[in-house]
Image (tube, rainbow, N blue to C red; front, side, top):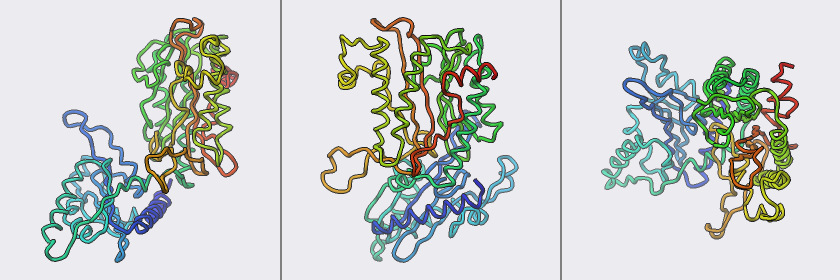
Length: 454
C-alpha cells in the first residue's frame, strides 16, 4: 500500500470513528501505539505498532498517541510523536518528528509526545465522554490521570472532567470487521507470499531433516518476497507433534512415513495471512493418510460452500463437523455401537476426541482479528444469547478443519499419531467468496505432484 493511499484510508477511518462518537454524544478518544519491549539487557524485541493505532494513522513509530476530538465545537485529529533528534537517529534510524508526521498522516495537528499530558488537560476539559480502552498499554494511564487531576483542580471555575467512559475499541472493532480495497490488497499479497513459502517448504521436505529446517525455508521466503515478519510463530509439526494444536518447538527430526503439518503465514504491510497445509515427508501419502486427508478436505469443501453473504458465521463449522463426524464413524475412529449415528455423535460431542477446535476465525491486522462473532445487542435483555453474525462482503475468515488422532483404546492403529489440518484465507464477496490462498497446493494429487517436482 502506498503512503498516500494508506494516509487517505486512515483519514477516512478517523472521520468514520468521530462520526460514531458524535452520534453517541461526542467526546475525546485517546489511542496509543504499542510500547517497545525489552528482550534482555540493552536489547529490544522487534517493535510492532498497535493494530488499533495503525488502523487509524498508518504510523509505525513507537511512543506515539492519537487523540480524536469530536465535540459540538470541533472535530480534530492530533498526533503526538517523538521529536526529531539527530543523535538518536544515528543509532536508531529516521524519526519523522511532529511536523513531518502531521503531513505524512494527514492529521490536523501534531505535537511532541512529551506534551501529551498538558494538552490532554485542555482537550478533555468539558468533553462528555473519554474514549479509551483497558486493552491499551497501562503506561498511558498516568498521563490521563494527570490531565484529569488538572481539570478537577479547576472545577470551581465550572470546568468539568468527562462524565462518562467508553471503550473505543468496541467502535473500531466493528469498522475493522469489513475490509476496504486497500486492506484486501495487502491480505492478498500476504496470502500470495505465504503460499510461496508453503510451496518452498513442501519442495524442500524429506525424511532426515529437522522441523526447523523447514521453518527456515518459510522465514527466508517471507522476507525474500517482501513480507515484514511472520504473522505468528510458525508451526512445523511432524508425526505425532501435529496432534498438538499449538506446537511451537520445531526441533524434532522428520521421519520417513510421517506427515508434516505446517501452519504459517506472513504479515505484509501489517496485515496477516494464515495458511495450513499437511503433506507427507517422503512425498507420498500412505493409504491410511489418504483416507483421513480426504475426510478433512471434504470437510473444508463443505465449510467453503457456506462462505457466502447471509450465511451464519457458524454454518461452515457445523457443516465441517458433520463431514468430519461421518468420516470418524466410517473409519472406526468412533464406534457406531457406542456413539450411535452422526447426529448422536454431534449431540454428545463425541467427535471432539479428534476435532476439538472451531473451524475458523476473523483475519486482518491481527491473525485472530477483532470483532464480535455474535450480533450486537440492540434491545431487550442483555443477558440473552445473541445469534451469530451473518457473513457480509468485506469480511475475511479462515476455514481450517482438522483431525488429530492420538493413540487410544479402540482407535485403529493405522491412524495413530496423525494430525491433519487444512486452512485457507477466505474473503466474503457479493457473489460468494474468494479464496486468497487458493494457489497453495491442497489436493493429494497437487501436493504429490509438487513434491515430485512436476
